[in-house]
Image (spheres, rainbow, N blue to C red):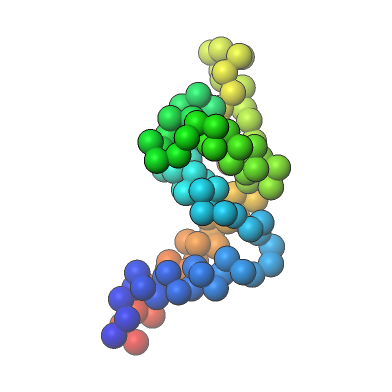
Length: 115
């Protein structure tokens, strides 16, 4: 019997090759998932916060990957409500589609893990 998690990983690997969503390198995917954990708590991290989001990635690399995620249409910048100089990282509709696809895969993996 395959565990739900292993089934999800298999489906996610296949889904990453489907058309409709941009290709992400591993660092972009890692950052996007970390941003999603903030967004799930109704917090949009600032660019400065993002530069220190992962000790395993240099700030320069994070900045290049943020630029890549923005070019690919997965994130956008939103002005901070209290300080207009601060840029917040917000999800786009395409990011919502990205996470929706993975949500569907996870649901499918859990529902079919017992069969």
